[in-house]
Length: 484
Image (cartoon, rainbow, N blue to C red; front, side):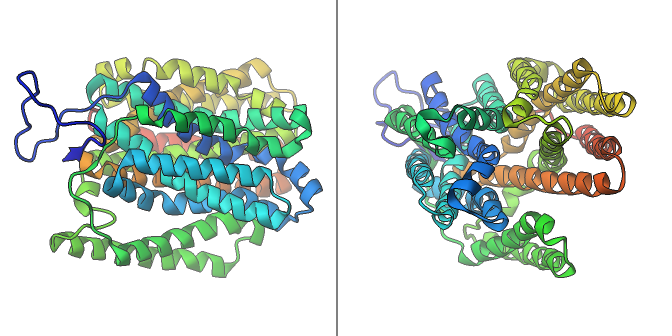
């Protein structure tokens, strides 16, 4: 059951009849302005994951930060972001999604200002950690609100826009970061990449009342053991992903994966026992066992890993071999952005016609784009056809537009509105972890192969890996249920 915060109960002869016991109430609806407000906060969180990349040299020169500190500026944000998403979703279920979104957005705006004012590298790293935690508070509320207050085609359109925001945010971050640093707005230099969040965040906060409130009818209980086990598991996995490339993948680091596996197993058993006793687990086994969520997450992981590896390796090739700066390399991703946004507008209609096979079609188109890029690089190196490269990037974006938003809808379809925050937290955590893992593995593979082989061979082999991930998504898609 979902309550609507701040809205009076319906009364009088024209009031809608009460829902039968156990049935979800009618969706409150989400106006265009409300959708823009919630997507604005989400866009800021996505953009800030990549916007800082092109400013690292300037930060190093100004604050005299070493390589390890600069790595924390980037990865520290992702660490606290990924670690807090599930808990942030549960807090939204318990205390109200609009309220948690507003608190998270206010904290994100404040920590962005602190990042822009940082007098030292240590201050900047701390502010970035807090910024990631603030993002973890606001992001789960976006999908949870869409899930709780919309239905039918309205939900499909809203999730389509959410998916477009997720994909385009990372691309726009690289373009915008390069532009702000190049223009040196008001003499702020790198600080502008954080300062730009402040007026946007304040504007969204002023309009947050337009977002319909929702929360679980019964406040979920706290699950300290489950939260602790989830935290240990996540920290171990993130430590391998974040520290592996810099440390050279030592054996002791790989042992953390065994600890993570043991933590995950203990977490599953703990949550099952708690739910069987009528408790309120952090991760409900019943919700996670739905076919749409289980199979959708199985497809989301290789899809997101492919996306993360593609963006990271593209940046290495564009800036390393072709000598593009951050703005130029970001501009090369324009076909991806245009194709994704254009196709995403028609995804609900295509989904209605093809059902679950829309993911199959997306995997074929995305795989075709990867194959085209591999052939162009292999046959045309060192001067591959720019037209064909841009076409391959566009096909990759078009396939992503068919796959991503559809999987979002499919994964959340069976999640009760009362647990929308938990469901969205699981979804976004899986997405972020897989994207980070893809970027780490793809980047490390490219760098190691480029040292022993030619740059073109390294790029082609990484693209072959992306092709394999597209095949995995294709195979899983054959058993996916129709999105709702």
